[in-house]
Image (cartoon, rainbow over all chains, first blue to last red; front, side):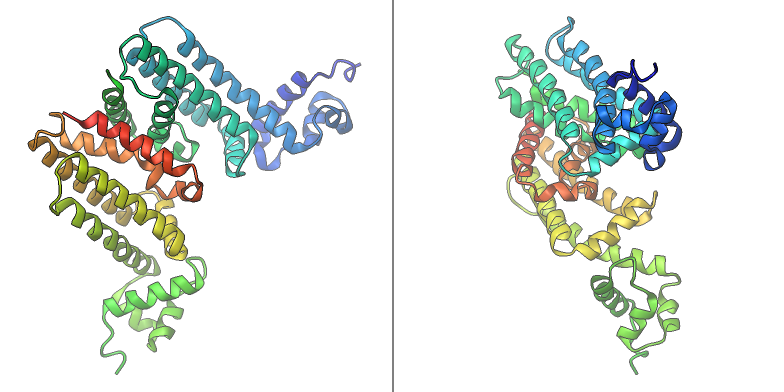
Length: 195
Length: 195
C-alpha cells in the first residue's frame, strides 16, 4: 500500500530528511527506501540514479529560494534601485540562511557546484540572472536606471556580488566584516546603474 | 663553504624550486636542504618551522605581484578611471598567470588561504586595497571620481572584482565567458565611481 502512493514528491521529501540526517557523503538510496518503507527498486523507478535523485532534491531546494526572490522581482514596490536593493538583500539573507541553518543540504549543493557543468546549478544561476534582468529593465523603463543593456548589467551585478551569494564564500558570511562589505558593494553598484 | 653563504634568499629560492617540483603536499624541508647541499638543521636556523618557510616563500611570490601593481598605482598615466582600469586588468592578468603557469606555488598559496587568518594572506589583501585606495583618492582629487570615501570605495571595488582575483575562482579563469564577465563588471564599477 505504501508503494501505491509513492510519488516523486514523497521520495524527494524523504531524501531531504535522509540528507539532513546523514549528510551527502553517507546518505544512500537504501536509506531513502527504508525511510519510505519501500524497496530501493521502487525509488529507482522514479529516479534512475543516485545522482539524479540528488539533483532533483537540490533543484527543489533551490526552487524555494527562486520563488521567494521571484516574489520580490515581480511584486509591487518601487521599481529600479529600491527593488534591486531588496532583491539583493533577500538573496544574501537566503543564502546565509541556507548555509547556516541547513548545512547538510548546503553541502550537497556544494558537491554539485564542484561537478563542473551541473545542469541544476546552471539553471539556478540562469533563473537568478533573468530575475535581475527584469528588475533592471523595469528600472530603465521607469527612468531610474541608465539606458544600459539589461542582460549585460544583470550579469555584471550578479558577478560583482558573488562574495555574498556564491557558496565558496560561505565561511566568510559569519564574519562581522561581511555586513559593511555588502553595504559598500551595494552602494557602488546602485551608483553605477542610476540614470 | 656552501653553509657559509647560506642566506634566507638562497633558501627561499631553493624552496620555490622544490615546491614547483614536488608540490605543496610532498615537498619537505629535507628536500630543500638536499637541494642546497646543507643539513636540514641549517635551514631551520633561518626558518624555525616548515610553516614559516612556506609562508616566507609565498610572501615573496605575492610580493612580486604587489610590485608590478605598485608600478601601475604610483606610475604616471591618467589618474582616475584610466589608472584604475589598468590596475584591475594587471591584477586579473597576474592572478591568471600565476594560476595557469605556476600551479604548484598557486596551490601552496591556496593552502595558506584555507588556513583562516594567515598573516601573509591578510597582508597581501591589505597591500592591494591600499593601492586601490590611493588610485581612487588620486582620481577624486583630479575631479574624475565622485567625492566618496576612498577606503570604503577601495574595499568595494576589491570585493566586487573577487571573481577575477580570488583563487577560489581560478577554475573559471580559463572559461571563454570570463572575458565578457570581466568587462561587464569593470564598466559598471567605473560608472559607479565617476564624478
